[in-house]
Amino acid sequence: MIEYFLEQGSTYAASLDGVVNLIGVLVGFWFMASLGAFLFLIFRFRKKPNQKAQYVTGYEKHEARWVHWPHHLILVCDIFIVIGAVQVWVDIKQTLPEEPEAERVRIISQQWAWTFVHAGPDGKLDTADDIPMIDELHVEVNKPYIYELSSLDVLHDFSVPIFRLKQDSIPGRVITGWFEPTITGEYDIQCAEICGIGHGLMPGRIYIESSQKHAAWQAQQAPIALAATAQ
Image 1 (tube, rainbow, N blue to C red):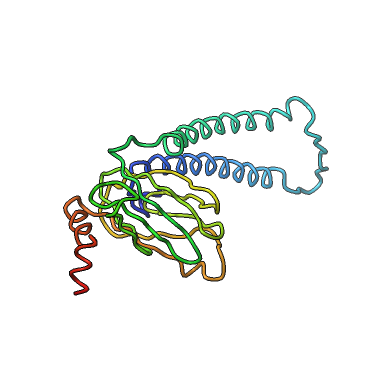
Image 2 (image 1 turned 90 degrees about the vertical axis):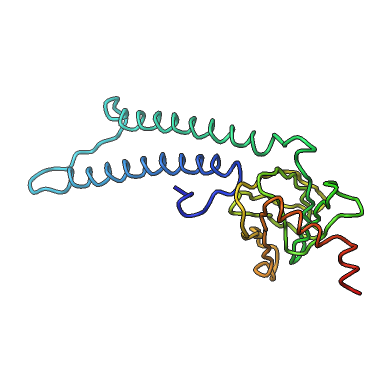
């Protein structure tokens, strides 16, 4: 259902949407069932002339079953939700893609900007061709990325709605995670944590590019090209 309103831009977006849809369907079903039962009881046992009200305790076995049976069925639904959520959690949070197929990118949050350190053409961080950018993250479509997320000051939250990615960044910690884009385009990056008075001024953009376009962007950002432009 969510996918009709927001594109799925990563390999795991559909799995997360599936869990949300499952929760929505089950909760929606029980909400409608409860509402229907509530309205039926109001109508069925409404006040009538010359009829004395009956006091029902709910302790009798034939009365209690109308509470216990739905309760047990809801617990069964909870089990389905937990199983689905744990599978998605393990796939996204516990299983990182293999390197060197996956490229690392460093994400640094601070009040109120994002710093993204891209690996250069050599595909490795902490080398001479690293490409730092402010509020711009450039990635290649159909390529897995492992991010190293940190914060310089307060609690932030790195959120890319098109990926269904949302991860807190905590001062003093480096948190790793991953994503693999599946579509090209330009999309929003948000801070999803109220991080101070300038929180609303902390947007970023992610540029998902084809391999050719990404290679051209890397070439434009190379130090030798920047030096030539300065002259």
